[in-house]
Image (cartoon, rainbow, N blue to C red; front, top):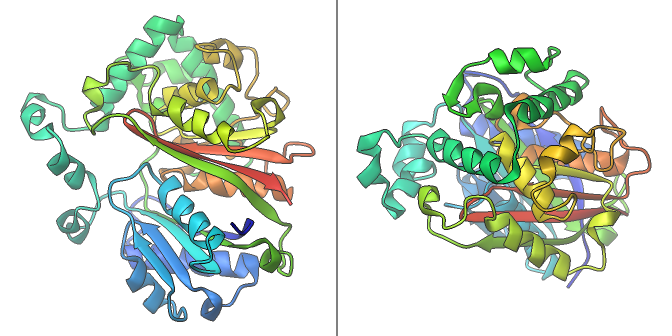
Length: 375
């Protein structure tokens, strides 16, 4: 196994109703990542994407012949193309792989036809039986899971308000964030419920976005323009079908298994983590990950956040770009990119002497995480 580094990261023009296609977002984000790394398009010999067509993107961008390629279907967000890119380089299937996550605020008809959205999930499970009763949005199961989490942990709505305020503070310093205005606990609590107790500021912010990350060998990365960030290990886990509503335990889900797998492949310990970038498609998911990864006590994330554990001066500064609730729905790619920037010393909310970062995606039936270190 070859040691793998992340050499380049980049975003497209991100926003609401940008008018750009998946191809535009793929091109803009890849070109930004190439410029960030100093790598030539002709040197890319592997591609992976969640959203769009990897082979089409490679041809469009003038990449050389591809030794390895993958277009991910149903999978836990950006961690999937990222893990496949890492493994392709580690095993020698390719030397330089671009991994994308392309998100559209409103999926195109082509995306719906190809099944690259929730339509595929619906076809793979029993959603057609319960959609007639109003189960047409992930906010339905999110409200169930958040309610159960509050019941088991004693978390209050004020705890989630505190979480939102901390994340908005990070976002206020990040020009990549779409929501940057200061936020108070009172303002959070005044926002409407989407599915009680889930409020609108507990949900990631829909937008058009393209995110690209370049994986290559450590040797190659040391000759490039950016400080070296190494992939220590990564993990996937799946425990159930795609019916979130029938999970036997709505609090201890796939992040538990993904975290156990992650730590089993490294000598690094949770206490070594300097910063964590943890999925917040819904805010309670970040709390699930803090606990699953051992960054706080089991069922102790609300108290951990209440006591400032996730702030910049806290024990584990978390979601230091502001999280997807503020930077926009980038389906976890932002957490990989922010981890890289932290270890390079380039974050807008920089953690002092950061050397170890963990980022994670998803919850419920499937999840994944990746551990990065300063090279």
